[in-house]
Amino acid sequence: EDKVVQSPLSLVVHEGDTVTLNCSYEVTNFRSLLWYKQEKKAPTFLFMLTSSGIEKKSGRLSSILDKKELFSILNITATQTGDSAVYLCAVGMDSNYQLIWGAGTKLIIKP
Amino acid sequence: ETGVTQTPRHLVMGMTNKKSLKCEQHLGHNAMYWYKQSAKKPLELMFVYNFKEQTENNSVPSRFSPECPNSSHLFLHLHTLQPEDSALYLCASSLRIFGTSESYEQYFGPGTRLTVT
Image (spheres, one colour):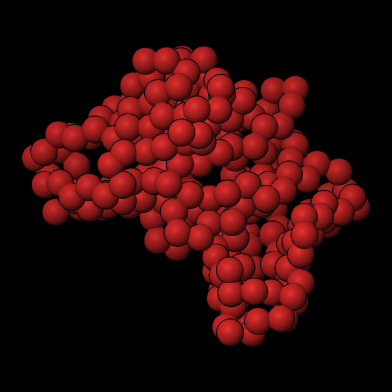
């Protein structure tokens, strides 16, 4: 069965800390891995990763994919209270057009 | 207005009511999706439309009925729902459906928080 597992389920850190969120997957015919941030309602797109070892970066956020070990990490440096959100990971496959979603990591940044 | 919009944002309905959720995208996309999001569970894909044609129905009960009159609009018609149907219903769109020769990210609307009493 195809699955995506995110860890930790929740995380509380202080402003300024660096956090690493994990997403591991077991799917057939992997195509891409996507990260989203969900604050109140709408998940907003962060990154799409298709190749191993190539870091994607946007400001204080970065992400990398390891297709050999079947996981991705999302790093957030110098965290701010506005980074508090649920971070979702999803995997797309060649075999169908559905995304397989993880349950998310709830990140709380304390001032 | 840009992006993906959904109305209403909140809906409370009894089990015998009939209501509809509306989604509109202003991104020129050709694929639209309905998802159900329940607390602490992964997003559940309900329906996929590609160029107005339904391509996926993930064993969704018939009390949920989608309608896609054009590539910009998507509806979810609800009738005789159950309390366990209470959830956040998210609409999303993408340029194409994922899994063809390219990968396309999905853009989400703000969702409709549905409570069935």
